[in-house]
Length: 350
Image (tube, rainbow, N blue to C red; front, side, top):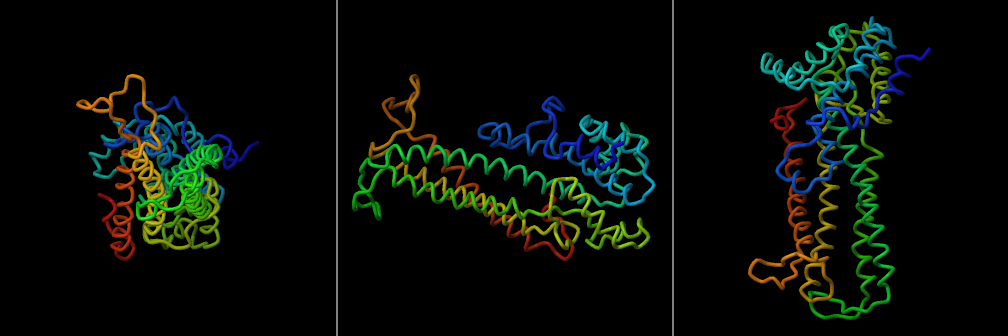
């Protein structure tokens, strides 16, 4: 007979959700999403991903607590497992309006469909247990997607560089004519930057820790109370939950939140990718003016409403525009981290 931990491992996909669940909640809302976001990235940051992950975290916590001796029944865990994906957002909003608390709104909505489990949902946890751990999980899945996209871009550039490795072109320094180079050699400059970005993304993924089970101020006091002061059981609880959610590492210490330095590091990596993209597409824009390269131009495309002959490098311009926005984001993360007074403030919660 399978243990509840084994059932969790075999039945719960901690990295996402089935494509046919919560179809109206599978899109992250942001002004840039409709225009630019991929379906995959939008799904990672969608309400469906966020709130089904909350339920998985509650199930992982209860499963680990049962394994370590708390009075939690198999029937309670079965009910939780059976209702990971049928989130009633209207009901959760109704409860949130009543309690003025988003997490408790979803605790009660979950409890309605899993009434046996209501007494043990969120047992010993604080809001940041679901909030922060879900953020980390979404960051991890987002970075995995970014890394895959980087590999695809590098593969395309590799083929381009090899194809034009011997095609001579004028090199520029200070945007003044310099010695000859080749089209393929110039492409390797772009590739090198993106390869450095790939290595940084890989480093962050390999070292990204889960917040884990830390309690309200990082002392795990509520869990120590639940386990009658048994520190080893609380340590095991933390390890089990992190492992069930797919993490080998957890942060050694925390306040109420994981250190916002992690957000800064990840946004810095994304800024690095944006820098590389801007450099490459900036070069392409300059070369387009020289008529050395052109972006694809569709049969019925109009280059300008007044000057139909124009071949504006619109794709590269959009990349540079988005890159400028992304490069500005680490400053906000730096300010958020710097202003985390003591165990936490609300600078990052608005």
